Length: 194
Length: 212
Image 1 (cartoon, rainbow over the protein chains, first blue to last red):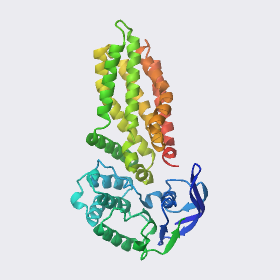
Image 2 (cartoon, rainbow over the protein chains, first blue to last red):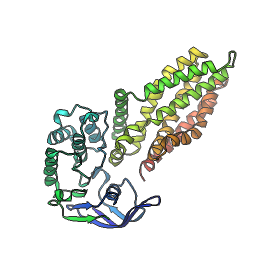
Image 3 (cartoon, chains in turn yellow, brown):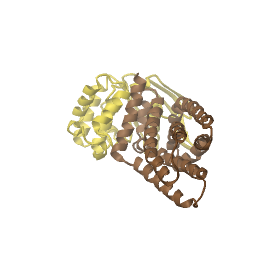
């Protein structure tokens, strides 16, 4: 699904990523670790097609609409409700039976009762749950997750564990994290960035 | 049909955001009315109507700039643009949806600005209204693309006027010409050609603006 060779990314003079080589197969779970500024987020953005590498080769064979991208920001409109945000994404991502799917995800992530509340009124943890709903809405076959446990309380983390456990064998994952121990049981490959 | 449904959903979303946040249209209305009031007192008594018409276009252009500077504010602040760009829908739908909402905002501002102009300066005729309507199309088309470009940059507040104002010169020439010439048809034609040409260019190039 992803094939990268000697990947390099620069922003001006600053080199963010250097010489990254990786392969991610259809059912692989790649754990990306590294200190702040090592290029974890940049690597995910490159894989998502949101940025272009400065040097090296990058081939992602998954269609754009089959990628699920969880960023630092929740990528939702704060003035829209949780339901309206997911409805909008559901339409743009061509989700079949999107109302049912939206409802199911909101239920699974414990946001059903807050579905008519604006995202701007959500706590950090609720926003992360909503962002996870958005990421999983279209049943992506490649999931790019940047610090997925960020802001989640114990209950939220447990719900995410369940989702990852159910999906780990059906989709490819590239997960950037500072908490690798939490994800070790899912990981089939590891990449450490310096 | 799917494309138009996407455009409709994106434009509706922008109108809903504005209805709830109310941070663009009130500012545009306040700006255009206060600018016309200032111009009313700036022009000496007995000044020609031509000068007043010119000032109206200055007010409309800078009001549009104010609206455009907020065009992608929600997407920028929440990083939503990444989510939209990754969607399998045609990326030009993002541009068209945003341009339609900008068009609505401009129309609303002018619904107040033109009567205020008539009150302070001189009556509004059909050629002026036609010129403003055609100018709006060009402003929305070009302005939306440039607002998206400026959003990606660091000095976005500086970048947008620097990019937009030179490209708006034909709009000003066409708009002012249509408002004051004896034969406005030629200038309305110029605006029409500008709108069509830039709408196609912006529609086709938006994808490259929102991706690296």
